[in-house]
Figure 1 (cartoon, helix red, strand yellow):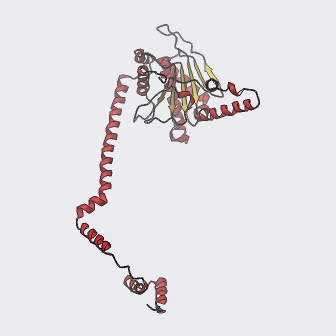
Figure 2: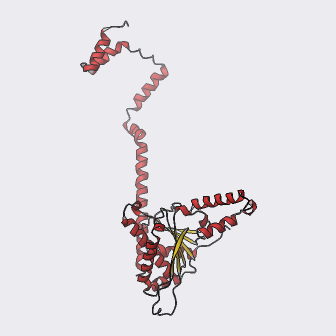
Length: 332
């Protein structure tokens, strides 16, 4: 078709002032569009088949909405399962809270653990700082949780407790944490509390002697308790620093490369950080280590309660029960 000089002017005028309707624009452009290619017999047959299939609304619905239907069914069943599981664990925790509550009385905790075959000599727990430390309430809650767990361990006769908190804020408030734990022990034991030692890697320790009083009614002395505060820098970073130190000593001929072994690394990490805990207890709903020192948990029993939120004595007691019945095969 020959080119009409009036058409570009009309198109530009419409583009500037929008004076044409949609039908007029189509009529203006249609003469310049290429003609559609002719359809083959197979294309015409396919078009007729599609038109025939479009007549069945149920088939079109199943084809277009089948994935949405399947998703809805799976989502409904999974939501029901989650609700039932959460309700079940909430009931179990409530039952443990009723039948096993300490009432801040060491004798009740000792009665709970008396029937257990064994207790961990070194218990480790993972705590989390709420609200990412934006307010003092999160720190106060964290310190109170650490003090509660330390009092439970002292009452149960567990001599060593390590508390891991990723950000290391407890290590920054070491004297305050030690003071809170000491006050919590007084509320449990009165003036006859155990000797307390609170320390952290690469930080001077804070030790308190046992509080002297009139003596306990049964004549026994509470076992001293050691509390170790850990953070993320005591995990992989410590392994990297130790590796660099051993490498530099080997390059300077202060240490033979043949002397560098797993036993040496294990001894250095145990001395500078801590030894391997017997039981690692999580108070969150999932198994999340949050950068916990990986070297020290090779043979550690890990315990957590699904769907649990917050630190509670019922979780502490259930963890001790599971550890008591666990079989330590040591890789065999």
